Image 1 (tube, rainbow, N blue to C red):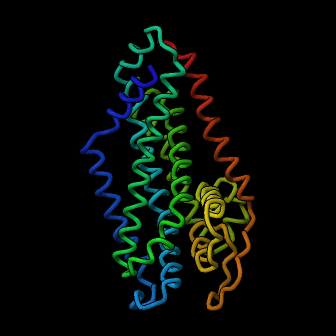
Image 2 (spheres, rainbow, N blue to C red):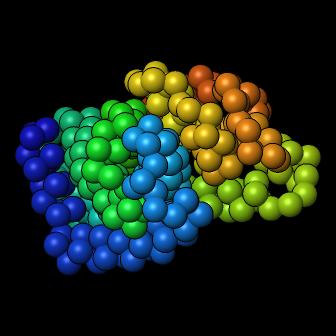
Image 3 (tube, helix red, strand yellow):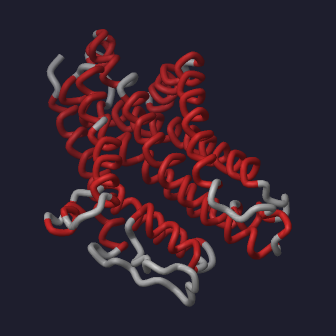
Length: 302
């Protein structure tokens, strides 16, 4: 039953028109973002030393991957695609038909969850590669810089993408179990990309509102930034200070000095929340939502 539900879910998600529409929207926004991200880099960057090129490429790639590749875009994709599975089957009545048979309900739910994560993760990996291609082409880097500027952080970034996929999938599954409606499931899951973007704006906006009201406690982007930097450090070499400064602006994780002309050593963490605590919170939220969905699914009337 697990494999049957898994294959059925992957089949439902694999809508070529929907996937093409998403990739087209993703690539269009990516083009504008990459143009802005690479606009402030030195002219004739391919004439710099290989080490300098790698640092520049790494700074842009990690920031753009966090903000768009496996940030707003992947969270939005999760909102869209997860609503097409369990909630859609419930709305059509086919879920009731399945559950009326002697099946293990936990298998149905877990298979649906795993299929959602696998499909979103494939989209996430494709997104990361598209980000790399866009930054490389528009930045004018030498081909040799790709290894240290992209591939060096790809394991940590892919692991981070897997966590994001699991988090948004668990939220969508839980919403689908309780609402049993596509639009309501999508609306509830959309809280994730909305929080990510809205609190990013609140964080970079001049003023003390963000810290005065402790908005970092509910800032999904900040917690995910904590997790991202933690996984990058755990799976590779320590980040150069220039990369930390770029990530510090976008994620809010590092203390970025106003004068960045002579950055040395390593930047201090802002320290609103310890990175390990952010990771624990994300894992707790993922498995907590999945557990709540499983309990409700077992009790669901048909």
